[in-house]
Image 1 (tube, rainbow, N blue to C red):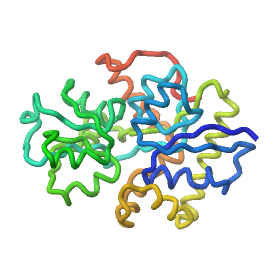
Image 2 (tube, rainbow, N blue to C red; image 1 turned 60 degrees about the vertical axis):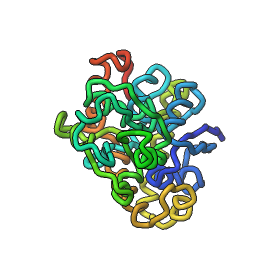
Image 3 (tube, rainbow, N blue to C red; image 1 turned 180 degrees about the horizontal axis):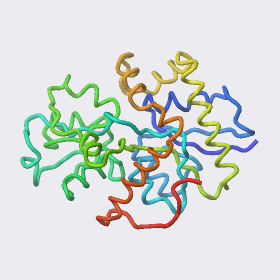
Length: 276
């Protein structure tokens, strides 16, 4: 048996995807996994350190990690109508936010990358765990916040308003679905082992779809928001056919995001392929 370290977030889409894999419910070709659950920005930073064999990652961070990691074709969070939102408790235009603090869920998150691409660059940022951004805006520590994950479904309960849907802007700008995050494997694992992991991950997602109730307690154990409707909406939004296999359209979307970031100097160019 070979044991690999695996990082993913406690968000419902990730615990849903990885439940069968880490609980030994599917064939894994002689592989076992030691899981580590962290928020996405912590995972981004761990990947920069090379601390994990396999990890969920923001596609923003992946742009800086292509020399060491390769993208798996399964497990991605990518789709339409699922992008980060800019929310406020008073501003009615982005012009009103100039020179004001915006809270983001991490420097290397795709949410921040989209903000930078849309705005042409802004550096007055407050970096917080994603589940603290709504409170920061309500308390006046930030004039606006870029929210992701469960917060997309709950911000209105706290009196905040959507100023901009960054995912909608991306879709209208490029025609592609919005690439939020994916699963990476260390290139040093080798092509055969990486393919084994990719196949096992796909089986894990298919198992979750076939037996959706089996992961329920595991998902609730780690979720920030325990309302069953919110959890279900979260999974339905972020786990889709692109999660089974990115396909040509999904890979094209990732390539487009990285190329735009390269063009404005946010990340360095490389000729290394995104996948094996």
